[in-house]
Amino acid sequence: MSGLRFLDTNVLIYSIASAEPKKRDRALALLEEGDCGLSVQVLQEFYVQATRATRADRLSHEQAAGLIDAWSRFQVQANTVAVMNAALRIKAAHGFSYWDSAIIAAARALGCPQLLTEDMSDGREIDGVRIVNPFR
Image (tube, rainbow, N blue to C red):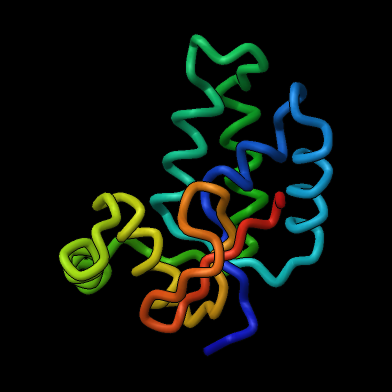
């Protein structure tokens, strides 16, 4: 496994959240550390959520696309058939939603020993990937 820490979408969203200053500061610190891995799915989810019309601190297309371009400096796992099949296996074995399973599968494919998210079971280990809530 590499030393990369895989960031879930919520870490990226908190980095732009004006209503959550403590979480925003923590997310920005994680991004500045630079030992991050992401997936195309995470970047897609970020774009959709950050530009959502009902979001109070909504980003423009240009702002969101600019951040995605900046975050492309990190290692980014592509959506592949192998990741999809691993996600299906994780879903069946562990009961996560398909989309959470795909995040875990992408983290594993990048060789990340940690998945940083507040949306899954903190401390649980799936296929060599430990889920860690960086906001607790």
